[in-house]
Length: 362
Image (cartoon, rainbow, N blue to C red; front, top):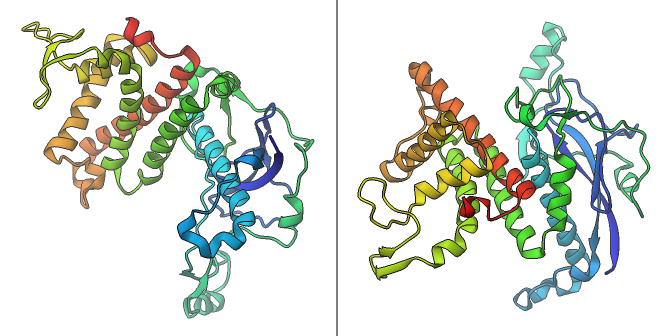
C-alpha cells in the first residue's frame, strides 16, 4: 500500500461548524482560510474533506485511449482521488440529513454578478443593463492549492459534532437550513465503523445504494416521480441482496414464464407459492426500519405507489405544471416522498448496524 493524503473542498446546504474525524478514514471540518471568499446570500457552504488514497490502486488509461497515455501519471491519481471523495460525500449524505456535494461542474455558463440588494436606483439600472458574461462555476481563491496540500490528517481547532438521538434524528425536522448547523445522529461513528469492516464487495454494494439515494436527492426538486423511484429502488436493491439465497431456492414449473412450483413465500388467500416481491419488501422494512402496524401500512402504500408509477404512468403531483390546483393532494405526495427518502436512508443504515440475514430468518 502506498498512501497519499488528499484534501478537497465540498459543499453543504447547511453550515458545518464542527469536525468529524473517523480514524484512518477521513475527517471533515469547516473551511476557515482567510483568503476564502464568503457571501451572506450563498446557499452552499464550503467544507474541507481530508482522506487518503492507495496510489497502487490508481487506474490505468485504457489502451484504446492511447493519446492520454502520456498523462496517465496525472489522470490515474486524480480519478482515484475523486472516486474516493465522491464515495465519502455520498456516504455522509445517506448517513445524515444533509447532502454533501462533491461533484464539480465544468460547463461554461452565462451569468451576471449577484446584485447588491441595498443599492440605489442608479446602480440597479446599471445592473439591469449589464450583459451576461461566460463563467465556470467553481470555488477558487489565490492560496487554494497551497492550503489543500497535506501529508497527514491536519490538527484542527473545531469542536466535536453535535449528536442527536438516532430515533429522533431522521424524523424530527430532517431539513436543510442555512441558518442552522449540521448535526449528526449518535450512530454516525458506529455506522462508519461497520462500513469500514465490510469486505470490498460489500463496500461496493453500499456505495452503489448510496449513489442511488443521492441521485434521488439531487433530482428531487424537478423530477419527484423519478426521485421517488430512486429511493424505492435503493431499498429494493438491499432487499434483493438480503433474499438472494432464499430466491435461489425457488423451484420453477416453467423458467420461461417463471411460474413458481415451490417457494418459502405463499399467497395469503390461496396458499400457492409466489415470488413474494411485495412481501419481501414489507418484511425487510418491518425487520430493519419499523414494525408497528402504522409503519407496515405505510410501506404497503409506498410499494403500491411505486407500482402505479412504474406500470400505470402515474406522476407525483409535484411533477405537474399546475400542481398548485391540487394543493392538498400535492402535500400528501410531498409527505410520502420525504418518508420514502428517509426510509431508504434508514434501510441502509440499519442494514449496516444490524447486519444481513435478519429479515430472511424472520
